[in-house]
Amino acid sequence: MKLVAAPDRWTKSCAHDECTLHQLSPYIGKIKSSIAGELVKKYSRPGDLVVDPFAGAGTIPLESALQGRRAFGADISPYAKILSLAKLFPPRSLNDALEKAEVALAEAEALPSPDLRTVPVWVRQFFHPDTLREALNFAVIARQHGNEFLMACFLGILHHQRPGFLSYPSSHLVPYLRDKKYPREEFPEMYEYRALKPRLLAKVRRSFKRFISTENVDGEFTMGPVQQLELPARFDALITSPPYMNALDYGRDNRLRLWFIDQTRAERVDNDVTQRRQAFVDAISSLAHKVESGLRRRGYCVFVVGEELASRSESHPSEVVVTTFRSTAPSLRLKQVLTDNIPDIRRTRRECRGVKTEHFLVFQRN
Ligand SMILES: C[S@@+](CC[C@H](N)C(=O)[O-])C[C@H]1O[C@@H](n2cnc3c(N)ncnc32)[C@H](O)[C@@H]1O
Image (cartoon, rainbow, N blue to C red):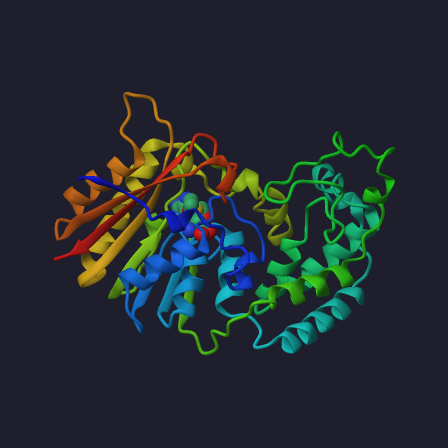
């Protein structure tokens, strides 16, 4: 199959045009919302049920909802669950969101002060103790079902070096302290107490800057490994980007946010598929079975696959997808392969070691 270059417009940043719900909180390996939007538009129709079994930050489910499709998302990560639900079911308006935030903040304030000795040192080192106490109590309230939007806003301001964030100077995407670049003696203001309330309310406001309502969206999210996932009996399109093999570690790279979501699961998000080639093959094969039985006739199945610089002896991830679909989903035909180079300067996935190219594999059912 001939490789076709992706359109030039895909190189353009969409940060100033996209619905700001896309910017709730960063996610490694996130697809650009403009590209996700184009794929949804081209490969599904209004009212269709669009499935994304590796939903991550919920980019494809949100773009599906914004374009009047029904959305079914799934992912193994509890962080992905929070972000996907927050985007599919946000508060109705900014006022509604601010009201909910005020209530949650007041409930958190009424909780007893937590004992920081129960908090692991690696978490404590990111925060001023008073900020950490507020963050811990707020997380208790935000963890309650129905508060996913507030939890997503909270996670979005958890770590960074800018003043609107809660941590000591740290990177935003992956939590690394930047205390060498910003030593405490030279930048004492970066190590002061950072009140949660004004920062959270400002974050809520930013999230509604370009808000497009998806009220009454027909959406669903299931948390779990794709191998055990039950897809809807019939669906119209599957658009997804599987984990990047040998390139990302979704547990380690999201560890601080995962710890606030569920202290027992931080760093325990299953990375098998990312790290073991056979697990990747098994995951794709189990998905191919489900697509073969559930995708409607003439429906599309689109995979966005990050190509790692594999050793010469191994097949590339996109070859794994193509050969697995050929043997396991014989009613699907590979229609097109687009290839997109990801120059460092415009990668939303700058942390992807080795992943320089993405393949867009477009299958269609007979
Ligand atoms: C490339 S990311 C998806 C990014 C997503 N398209 C977005 O825009 O944010 C791949 C996702 O696969 C998930 N994942 C890894 N192993 C999985 C498994 N066995 N079952 C389901 N999801 C898995 C990761 O948690 C990660 O969110």
